[in-house]
Image (cartoon, rainbow, N blue to C red):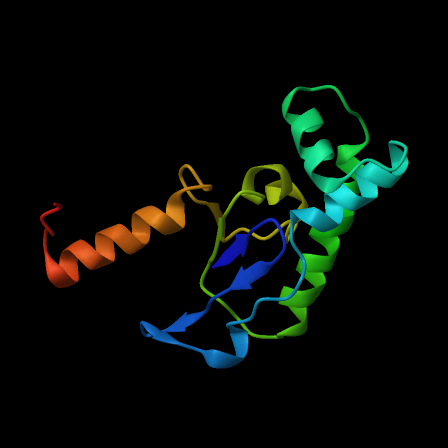
Length: 136
C-alpha cells in the first residue's frame, strides 16, 4: 500500500498477511513537496495557499509538480527490487498522483474514496476484532 499524505508517503507491505518491515516506511515524500514546487512557481505561496487555490481551480502548474513527485515515489518503490502482487494507492494525494506513480504498472489500484480509505479499513478491522462499541 502506498498512502500519500500531506507530509509523508506511508508504505506498507504484507506477505501472507504479515508486515514486511523493510517495506514499511514513511519518507518525507508527501503532497507538500509538490505544493512547494507549485508555490515557488506562483510567486512564493505557501503549501496551504497552493492547496486551497488548486481546489478552487485558481492556480496552474500542478501537472509538472505532480509528475515530479510521482517519479520520486516510483523510484523509491522500484528501488525495493521486489515483486508485489499489486499496489494499492490511498490517501489525499492518491487521485492527483495516481497516473504519475508506477506508470505502466498493470497491478496498480486506486482505493475507492482514497482520502478516507485507511480510516474505513481501520474501522472495519476494529469491528471484526472487537465488535460494535457503544458510545456514551
